[in-house]
Image (cartoon, rainbow, N blue to C red; front, side, top):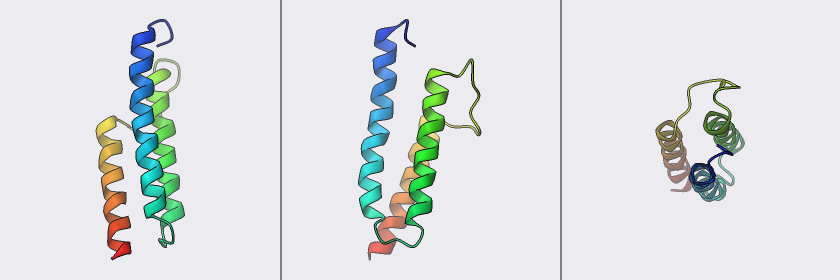
Length: 86
């Protein structure tokens, strides 16, 4: 990725998008009984996603991770946060 600056920037943008979503969800989960666990799950997904983007050949992820899987998990967490707020 480092040998191709354009590709590197594209990957950084993907990670940044999840960072922004994480911040939004963290505030939604304030006071949620499972909030700390759900936030930890999001952070673990993010870390594994970074590994899959930048070091896939050298290091394998702990579990399958993809942009689609992260979005799905974030949606579920968002729904859980929304249900708690009502």
